[in-house]
Image (spheres, rainbow, N blue to C red):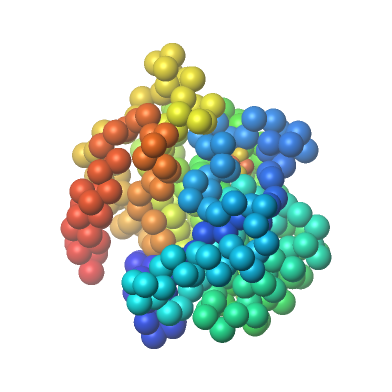
Length: 290
Ligand code: SF4
């Protein structure tokens, strides 16, 4: 495996910064098309807690996000369409958003977060077109390969939809990153190992392993208050991460090993709210693999 910073540096010759953007779309798991209420771990802002106001035009969102971090010496950026389901809008609207990013020289790559059941042909055509203009990654929210858990967390699609989407993206040479949540209710270590193995078998180019965070503005919070959900302990989490990282082929890009929910709404586990400690722990873990 290779860390995302190493990967970007190889690809772009310097550090690049991801800027989070809101496409103004919702999600089929919230508007009743696939489900209502969303996945039980998802926050009110559709897992995009740090995105700008979605009412702002895309050009403005991009400019403001870049200006915010330019002072740090940032010169190259990846436009990250993060919140809700970024491809859940008509293909021409999606193209408008991607074009706003791709036309800028300082945007060197594009990342699009979505569900695997929101990749119809017209959307795949647009993604393929833009992947030939700038490096582009699709981020697929799998969370778990165990269908029983998927039903429990209200994901509203079976894992076969992910494997099918992975196949279609691979056929079109569109790299994808798989998002997995560790510590979902009722999951064993074996289940999580199987989820990572499924993503690897499906040829995921990158992986995000994220601790289950119980956020106060998510449906999971109610279950937590009723004692139905037990958050992972710190040692247990890092022990598991070590095992899962050892399953990854050398070329797999590791994008994230923590949660990224807002500290303001974090109910549990509170140990993950100490970002500095988490970064130190992760760096120590990654050293073991370098
Ligand atoms: S995690 Fe993604 S698919 Fe699930 S409710 Fe949130 S935005 Fe929708």
